[in-house]
Image (cartoon, rainbow, N blue to C red; front, side):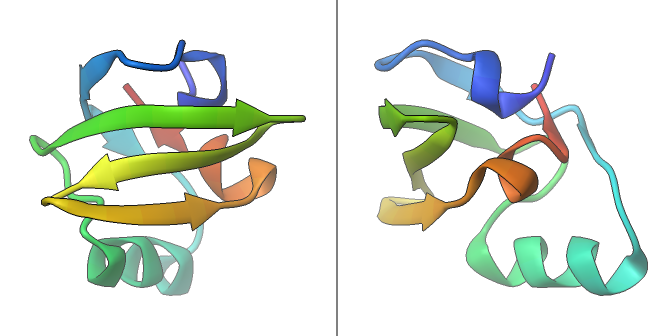
Length: 69
């Protein structure tokens, strides 16, 4: 399921990242790597704030939809 469907407080395993190579590389620099864990902190209209590698990161709905957990 895409990250936008996750509930706040859930600790999830990243299974796949969709999109172009540039998008995948951008998300990787933020810490979103396959096999890594991500925790949803809050969600507002599909935009999410997550904890990834002990850092809070805000991503918009279109980016969050590319991260499969």
